[in-house]
Length: 473
Image (cartoon, rainbow, N blue to C red; front, side, top):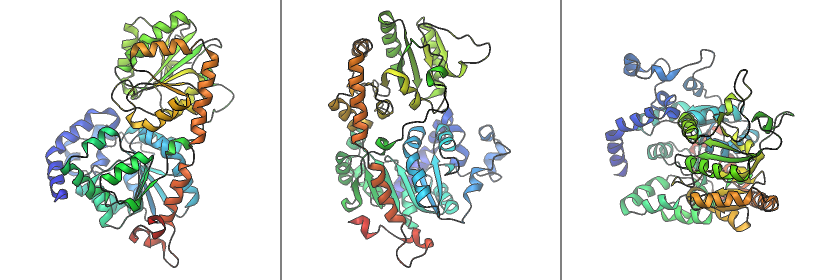
């Protein structure tokens, strides 16, 4: 029944879904593939040229859809929505590649930033594809082409038709690094919604959750308790980003030796204005301070730059630093990060860090990126997506919650001149990371049990097996 109603509703709102994805620049390029339109067979869409402006194909690069049709090895399909999820799952994919060379690894994303992260971080390890939209015919066709033996997905990215089709084909599905935010859990408690979620969760082979709270919540929504385990958060196991060559990140950012960097990462509208106001107060006390703003979505950099200039501040884009003929301002200024993949390394140069998505009701981003560099971590009240990490950092004294713009100014002005307090906070933040590692190993062991062939069975039987008894226990 739920399957019928879900697909009727999906069909009704499909024009809105496509329109929203077209409106998001970071989602446009992959849309033809997500709709199941492969090279040379776009039919009516190609006839009217609806997606021709999205394709931008590189003639030297093979079509991703065509690459998927290579049934020489069993395929482990890993789904990571965007950049953040790809970063989190990269060490897991690399280790799976090492442990299971008999398998091909395919990582799907929704956004262009996710695709770029896969190609940069997992080159030679995994292939990339865009995840299919959850229409029955698209999902069925995608699975038929890919022929996965195992499906892993990150942080509760539940798609009903995909899960139902995988279950029907006997493909084990594993939720990795699972979490359920308080807001999502509250919505899902309503009777009909809860019943709908139960139909999805009962298809799952294994749910590997970040915390005891997440375990309790997913079981309450209908997942079988015997298939749910608390493994911890794999983000604690992220390796420290490598610094290439002798040139430091400071040199790449055009920083003078005496300048002190205030890094605000993964920011959203509303937060940048608060941070610029905070910096204007800070620079009066500390003229050598420089603010680096890293918008969560870099397609917003033009509007953020205009806002900064309207406040009377000098601003410089990261991509312009070092260019011949480009003006290289000195003194108080805002550096605007308009490149991808550098933020985690840039936190190394921070005197104080702030992680965005927390002063506005987004739920927060990765608090561990500055913590692993032993930096003081500031964040706002909205940390539902990283609640456990926020609590651990505050309890250890490595992080502080700021409640509003005035509180942010107060905390930053107090920390900048107090090197002893900053160093103590930084050590505590790093200690939180070190004391909570181990989730990656537990996750790999659980996946290995699913992939380990039963004695006397062939590789081709992987997709035909349900959850092994070893995992159920």
